[in-house]
Image (cartoon, rainbow, N blue to C red):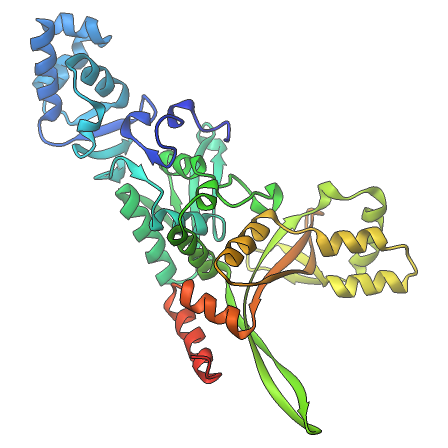
Length: 402
């Protein structure tokens, strides 16, 4: 459990978040005149406004304002103290909270307490976070956790927003367009903390090499499918190649259809001095690519890199095994999930990358191929995005597999 998650979130069901688990200073909006009614009930029980303020540790001025003005906003701390003094169970307020506010903006309107992540929507969000999304620490805002997601299409954008809103309520998003993608930023830290609570990783996934969220490991099959569908929507593609074979000395062609997606892992921390020296020999043979953001990356196929080292007559046993065998934990876990659903697959390391800051990364590819496995994927998971779903169906029809 990350240190950033307070003990307040560890109580109760780990996949649920209640309003009383929020930060004490968090501001809630209450519906109607409920806050005034609570203060009046407290005064009646205590005997006077002054006695009530002493009983719950609030100033007379705070309570007088709540009583005589038309307030609707109250801190989590004050609401808990009032409820405890009056004898009202915390869960009573679940459907009476109109908003969670930060400054002048409502970060979540009509919050759906308790937030429940053990749903298909929650599993899909976790899949998005470990793919095209991330949770990061905002150092400019006293190390508060934030959530970000990059959507390449309008449909991806709408699906992510819809899933977030179904679990949390109407959430305030900040949008930013960059490199033909829309970046969604959720400022409300409770969403990021809730996702981390069920196992979502914090930070650069290639660097920290996380496993899949524990909630997905322990979930029923429907949630596993929702998670896998989300990662294939974000990362997956449908590919194939022509294969030549002979029947009665006559050359025939066959199109091999497969579904694939890739993940990478940073390897610098695992390298010994000999391995680093050997990788330096490969760098001149790497091809450079420049991205729209301006940053550059060098790449080479792992098979080609090994061949170059063999030609140089180096003892490459250790680096060869390392490059071929190291794989992201996340990808291995996802391969196991697919296998548990009867979808056989394989992982192979395809590429070695070198970033501008000198970080080596191995790119691993998960591939689903052969008729039985592709059909199992189509029937049990499939893509959620319409363009990928239709493309897969068209290719399956062309091959007469369905």
